Image 1 (cartoon, one colour):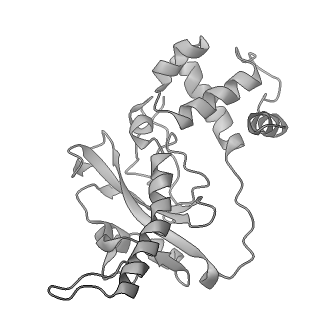
Image 2 (cartoon, helix red, strand yellow):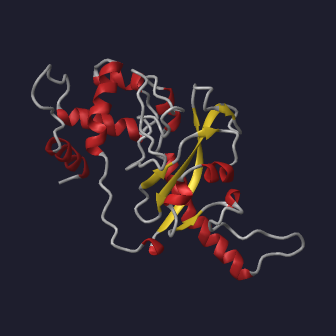
Image 3 (cartoon, rainbow, N blue to C red):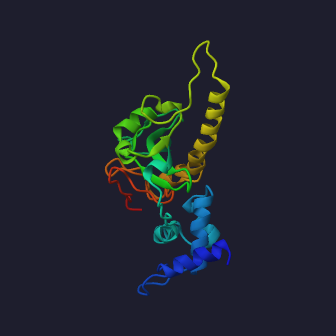
Length: 246
């Protein structure tokens, strides 16, 4: 059985066809699963996907909202102790329209800074913090969130922007004092492992999700908007995804 067939089977077993009441879906289950997969694997918006599948943008939105939780991966059990786990934290700028949470940022757009922790082995998201204005430094956003308490007792690595936070960051080169060979090798290994969080961000499609169908990063409830599915997200601030009524 191929990977796509497994997705269709999982959606069917989890009730993807609905309870049977109401109007039937205009697309078969396989096509709806394909629509969701294309949405999260490309930069196509809901309006662009609609003519490809011969449906309206509103129907595309309903299909994604219906099948998204059914297709989300279930984290594998982790029997190892917290001290043996390795998490990676980094901040990402999410362009949003809500000026209450956004600020002009280094990406030259009004954005929110969202701190995200992923598991280095599975690359699934462990937690996301309440968004802060995009002009806040990563270290400041980290300290203001509840993520440090959640990560207590777990090894967490980050980039040099988190200097002074107690996380594992690359060694810095002092003026006139080059790094030793062993330190350079440590930094190279650190970069290799930390790159996994960048790969996770690349799959988030936050720019598409935050501007489509009125879905935004919510300043009131916190967390990422419903289009920003990055695996199994648990907000450290008790945040939930909010829908602006699209």
